[in-house]
Length: 143
Image 1 (cartoon, helix red, strand yellow):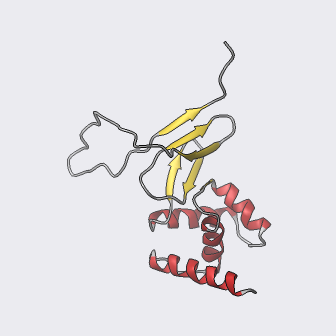
Image 2: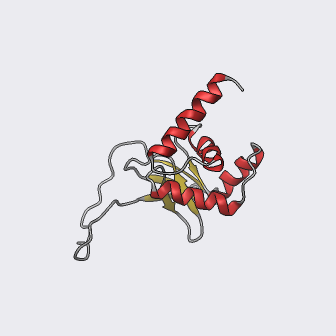
């Protein structure tokens, strides 16, 4: 095992620990797959496929559990795009997304702030945590 791999593994272990999670072998392996490639949007099924391809013996249920634990710990942001399609975003900053219909691809909106006005007042005792905007795209239709 090269020292670069070990160094990255230690960084992932630390990141998981600092989020308040126990760094189990499976959590570390999944976190390494999630965060090694920079900011990305993944469905649980995609991460599961990556894990299997990388030789990480993990069930889809374990992947879902880990993703939800990472989300609760603040390591991921959850995006519900379609009724049954949920993506997990490694970029937890406030930002918005484009979604390409038919391709099931989602990516960050890079340019400038998006303004949302006239939000309703939250119920008593509640506050707005964030507002997610997903702009749906499709190929232009012929005229």
